[in-house]
Figure 1 (cartoon, rainbow, N blue to C red):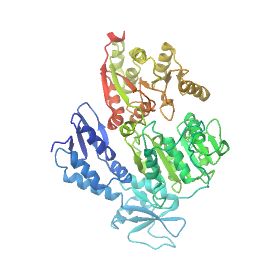
Figure 2: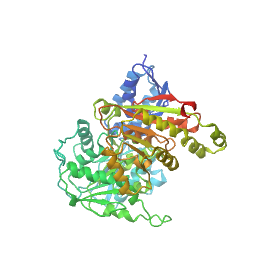
Figure 3: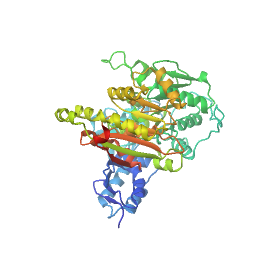
Length: 563
């Protein structure tokens, strides 16, 4: 055997990057692995329970997974790993939630029945599980779950390594006739792309039990919003859409009006600016998690979830789902619910709770596959490493970890790099993106560029976004408020001057700002201070994109070149 993979018994997989079959092997294993590290020559992946369960939910079988491993492995796949994969996938079919004749009780079917006693040995579970009820007899192969604990029990069980297959029928919700247009309001032809149709079909299935909930993973710029609209048209029911910010809420409303038969009097915005409720309501996570008293666990706007008989809830950028909304989502298990995201990565490790409460991954199309089909731009990624100025080195050495990151991230030599890159691409619309407001204000002031941060009023933000889209301004400095759900289709260059420590999803979202289809390449630059903590965090940020097949070209700039 001479494949590019070295598969180890603990579930780690080493990929030799220079091997001629490296790209094929990476594409083959990405659906059921997680990338751990990605230095120049050897990338390390890991098989985990959640990666296997998501793969199984998307249709991959044990035979397909093991065939892929064997096809690209340099040495025989360890039998102990094969056994672990088989056992983990079998757990995905161990527990099934089913309806009962009682409207307030669900049945938790257990296979094999011997697992029943194990579940009862967990004190937290035992408090929620009932061997029998007044109108339902005890069973050796099942336990009963009060309906109100439907979400909580799934959350607890996933934490214990037991994914639950939920086959309890979902509520239909309030009817809402609508369909997709064949031409947009501006007269352009409109139809779903093949991969968007596949995503909708994977989510809706046969419309029977076990369908109507889950997550759809799709590259930035590939039209996740359109998939959401298609689901609305499929189910034809009142819909609540949750978004990361007001600008994203407005974009959803614009897309609904542009591509469906719904009218303005059927759509409402529920944000800090407007709090209407209509058959289709678009809200922000921020307004839902607002509390009048930060010492109290009272969220007055959670009543929005009960305001109508919603038939579908769409979580835009579902990987951002805030902890308080997780709680209410646990109570919404009778609703159809769809999570849309470019990456399921969460730096807090709560991917398993997305799996349990929103639903498993139903569809995932690799970024490079969409790029090859011409639906997103081909992006060239660069990491530019620069030195720390001599006068900052002593302060860096004496600082704690957080301050070290700040000093490295806000390195003033980065301002000069930005200026040189703008000269390199004088005619391409460019976003300069960062984390630290002082740094962004300095760059905007020095280069005479408009700036958008969290302090910028929504009306001013949308004016600048509109002028950028119309080509009246071609360069824009933006903070992390532009990471998510901002539609700037002509942006062709992104220059990242600082980031949120090692956030993989942030890196993916920032690249996504420039991936709308173009007649030329898109360029993504990340500027990193050499020989500092920032190098470590940059390597972690790049992991997800490396997993998708992107490669960073390295450029080393000296201080002499920047002064």
